[in-house]
Image (cartoon, rainbow, N blue to C red; front, top):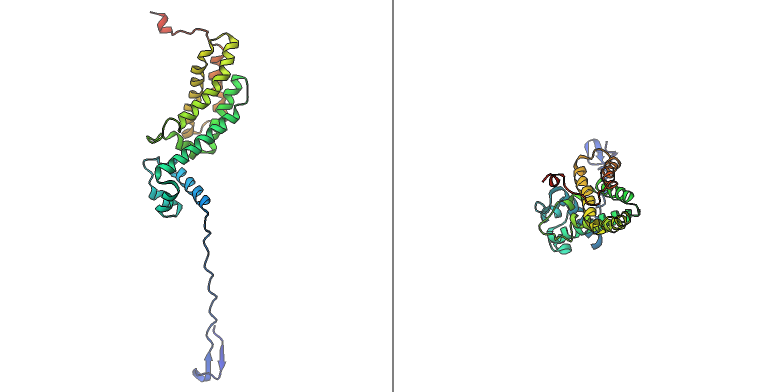
Amino acid sequence: MPEVTDGGDGVGGRRATPPTPAPKAKPTSRVRMSAAQRREQLIATGRQLFAERGFDATSIEEVAARAKVSKPVVYEHFGGKEGLYAVVVDREVRALLDRITTALTAGHPRELLEQAALALLGYIEEETSGFRVLVRESPLMSGTANFSSVMNDVAHQVEHILGAEFKSRGYDPKLAELYSQALVGMVALTGRWWLEVRKPRKETVAAHLVNLAWNGLSHLEAKPTLITARRR
């Protein structure tokens, strides 16, 4: 209720004192990102959109809108959608390869397979968006920057260990490349399936992968033949 005083021009010689105006709110200052921070923000935004929609269905307009910047800002940092996509994919390739190669410390093939399976499944579980980007093949990307290239790199590392194992068992070490591709491919395809179902938990999936692979490897025939070929 406004305060009243005597001696004014109001009714009965009383004048109303106007209420004290509320203090003006200070304008909130926007924190300006550095060029490096803005670049990281756009990479994170692009990573999420490419994971959700794929390369073709994602537009620069969507990247800019979600990052709350203008289109020229995205072009300034990456030159266009292709440039942003290339950076996102390159980062994911290196992150996945580093994770798997760091995990491969064992010298025994069975332990090696366990480590590779758990590393891949762990990446899928913790970096789902990144894995989705990698498994969405884009016609723009060459064979040097995609999920297949990562698996090939891992297979080459497994090949060296299998080669020594084959030689010690009297098998042809030249076949180590074939077997390493088969083993890593099995883990990779299972990982793509598990990306969507997420059941059972990753440790159980890894254990069953190793069970299938190792129990087969432990009874390898030196010179296997197809049953159908034997009947001819």
